[in-house]
Length: 83
Image (cartoon, rainbow, N blue to C red; front, side, top):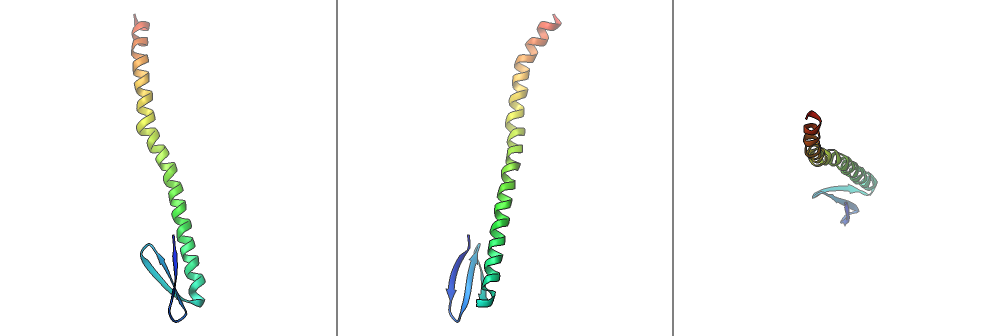
């Protein structure tokens, strides 16, 4: 989130992640555009992280569960079929 503050002598300061971007009135729009682009990129990375976590959770939780159920059901079933 960007925090906009008014600096003396007709300059603006945009504080973003602890770094200050100081611009004149003419550069004010450019600084805000930079902040908006950075926020949009951060939101995109957060969305990608959610889908990556879905794959990781499937590998580490769902697959061991399926293997455990198949072993519990499959071993006795194979023993019955083999004799």
